Length: 123
Image (cartoon, one colour):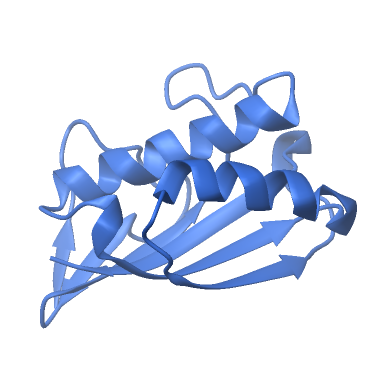
């Protein structure tokens, strides 16, 4: 097991690692749509999704992987009515790549965020 941490990655806000690699598989902790520097969330749901996917792609790249290597995504939504929007933005992000996925309705998140995502990928 190897903890991957680079200066460019978003830092964990608690007692956990942002990403762990084991036998070529990356386990990426949940990412909230908060700016890594200001810790503020974007104004719109679309901007939240774009930011969280940008963070995910950065983590994947820093760990030696890419979005087309994602095996599974877990998306937690504060309002299941946002499902059609997340589905469209997810499709835009991944294009032809279709990882296994689950969308889970959840209670509200820290800082008023509408979603949190986590992923499993390979190097």
